[in-house]
Image (cartoon, rainbow, N blue to C red; front, side, top):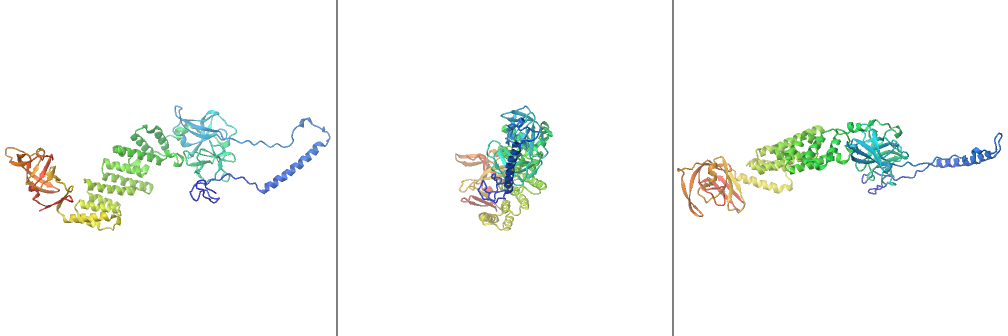
Length: 605
């Protein structure tokens, strides 16, 4: 059997192509009659001819008590006349769904079978309150009743004021009879189709549609309708497994069906949200979708179109939450994508959005705690995790450690590393970040211990070399202050704490005898200047000038503190609010300056 998609020759018994996996469709074959029927036909022919001549002889011979001719039988052919074979035709129309005000909200092509019955997917009635069947010839026919059993993906509905004659009957599908596909809008495009064993679905049976079936239509056997397909929306075909159409009895009022069967379900909620369009603000749409995830589902996912399936809704939610995060609305994302919504979605992208929103509104520590709680709950519910969630968890720890290295924080880097290591002991990148954190804490011994614990791939050689050199530097300069600046810079800026209360920007100046502070620091440090305050004569670019000499309780640089330091009050031109670190502070240290590398080392004497 030749596959229509990839043209692979497959065995006649195959349902699917061995090459591409597509369902195989067989062209209609001429039905061969067994030899027995040819012999029987010939015998019947001989008997008919012989009977004809015998009857002729009887009719021409005179009989007693009977006239030689009879007016009543004159001109009448006494041979049996076969009944005329009439072909039943499909009446194509549309099942039109209307809202409470009678406005049309959707329509689906369908056909009439067994005089008054039409079929439609149950999902296609979402959002409606009433139905009509509409054709160009007969106009609208109200639909008030139907037959449906819980779990059926298709509903059969009966026309109220119309009856169509000469249409195919509805019959249940028979497994061993040829099955033909008849599209509604392409006459003459029907063909025979072989299907795999279908799956029982309430009163119906379903099977994956072959890719050749691209249009809505019906499946037929021996001129009877036995199933339907709606390929624009659904990927499955549906075969009827109930009674013949003549035996169908409506068992549900359509208004009650709309009210009781289609109200309050997840798919109805999603349909209504999508139907309102993008005019609804993003926050409200995300909130509505999250609310729908918590509702029960009426349908199997294969029985609703792609846009109503949970996976599609979750993708839409991810797009909305990403937009909100980009626009600075992380607080709204945290509020909407709570623990319940995340567990219902079981989607990696939404987990990431929710956790990253918590990083932005709180911190890494609380975000990771939320993630670990989600992971545990999902595992308890599903018995397995979400694919990719462990990788995201590990990345979050790495980002946290990098954030601590870059910006510091209230949380100890080594404590964060130990937590991360407990969850991901084999992650090499995480392990090396622990080495960097130990170095940042000036614990070169712990850094070396961690670095020597593991073997590393060749791709990390450069990183390992940098860490080894840094450990060596830290070890050699233990007890020293290392300050990095732009290589070749004329001025080395540093951050200094004065009187253990306020920080100021200073410039390190090895040529200045005394430290100086800007006049703006006097008020902040609450320095009292009066007639007893010493006055000093200083040299400036404009000549000599007088200024006050004050005493600072302490000057602290990178944790090293010198007490009772003299300072002059000077506003340095071009360096507003800057002070100078002079020799009376620097003489307490051994100083090494490498201008080419931009490194200043101060080691206490």
